[in-house]
Length: 410
Ligand code: GAL
Picture: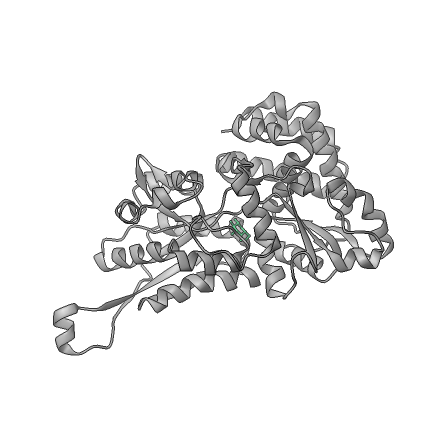
């Protein structure tokens, strides 16, 4: 285990009386873009300020790359001190195998059940009544981010919904701007599809397919419209030759692209670039059609250790992450919403305010990240990537294959 401990500089007498110990914990996560790095630095700062030492274990390449590395290290007996994952099913097997620290005592002492909002984020951390992770944010994937400079250059108003976005695309092309920036990581193609599903197909369709695993809904005329829109998006992204999601965001920031369908973590990139929501860029939840958000997000898990000092440090970190001040500092930089409602968000920007308003209104979708098993998720992503990269696959073909996946989904 890559965990070291060091005694704080203290006198011999103090060692005897207080045994003050600072603990180093290696923390793995996939937050390597500018905005993500700025946000995670707030967690590190809080841990270091408390006298412990945060050993940063950032893994480049997004969740799709990092997750298997994180999981195999834990299973393989080389656990880190703490790790980011999306809560819910991603850690299910690790928890069931007894490899993760039980945080129930901290959660009960600090009243997490009363303060986590929506409480289902805590439910996603809970198995058989025990809490195994600390939820740190609410992230929603259902957004489009639009560059004001790109639309100004093309001489058209900034769209206020998906249909206007599609209609304005030819003007962007004339101005040499790619309408839709799109990275190539598999999860990005799936995110765009699910987001179009909410916008074009509606909330009922999304819930039926993701929660109900309803193959009839997947084969319906409403779902056909989603595949049409997805084919449209594929054409609009011609010329977007980037891989990572934040490279695609950067195309929007630099007005090389009109927009990007991406989760609200994109906000962190605009902030690092000193762009202002509502002035330099616009964000539209639900693509401006159906204003809903999902309340997924990130959580930290702590692999079990038999060293009581490590366990104590892990609990300190969990407690800091959910504390009021750290919640505000972290989420303002991350572009996500805090998981507690009792914090001061006077510094929230335009996009965060939109998210908070939707959250308060209760227009909340079930979280897509937790809907399917890793296996089903992988099959959907394979299909979406193939569709995106092979224009000879028609929306009708793709829909048929999607129906087959949903019929067997778990
Ligand atoms: C998500 C994660 C976000 C985010 C994004 C891109 O899985 O929940 O926090 O930053 O990946 O890296």
